[in-house]
Length: 131
Image 1 (spheres, one colour):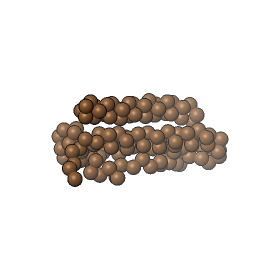
Image 2: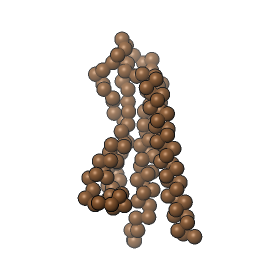
Image 3: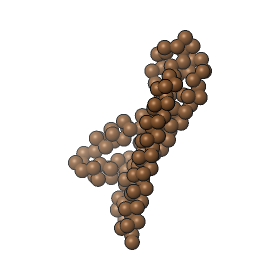
């Protein structure tokens, strides 16, 4: 099998889209549990994992770093975590702030849209090359 690396960026962008989607779900769960006593805010930090994977690479060019990160794609996983579990500013021990969550949701939606646009552009580039 020939490994050309044609889909390296698409694979990474796909994982990034999964991470943004997981973050969207975490934020939506936070909003759904705004009145649940004792609920602690959940978040997903995929961007830091991706930055770490790209910085870990010994190669100088971005293309090489992405190709290297593709070899370990299974390590890139968007997992939710509890954000500041021992802190709450409310009497019911819930630490979800509706205004903050709505801002994070809007910001994350912009990230997700940017990623999906990038995936679309990568496929358009492949389509041009194939013609």
